Amino acid sequence: MRTVHLKLEGKGGPGSEPIAVEDGTTLMGLLESLRSRPDLAPYLFDGQTGELGIFAAAVNGQMHRVPDFSRVVLKDGDEVILISPVGGG
Image (cartoon, rainbow, N blue to C red; front, side, top):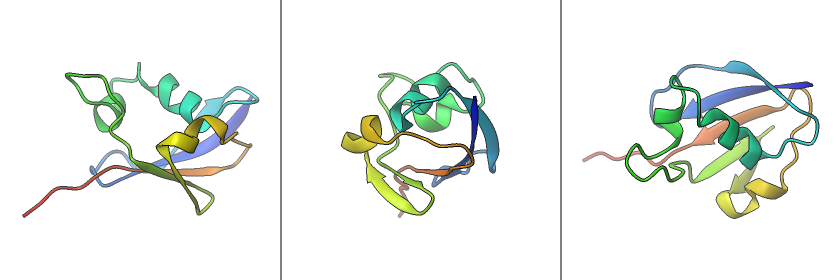
């Protein structure tokens, strides 16, 4: 098991939270594992379509876009910041 530190940006979600992941877990795998978390899923997935609402993520300051999420393998102690679109006017 490894621990990553998750932070949500753009939707006012919970602050940084340690999350336990299995060895070899990818960024996409982390997101899919959070789908069942009622405290986090509303910030990550569209409530009607179930589609991912995150458009980018930073792992230890390195930016990644959704197409790369399946190739980013998380390591113990990684800081993961999920970035969602922000609307306003």
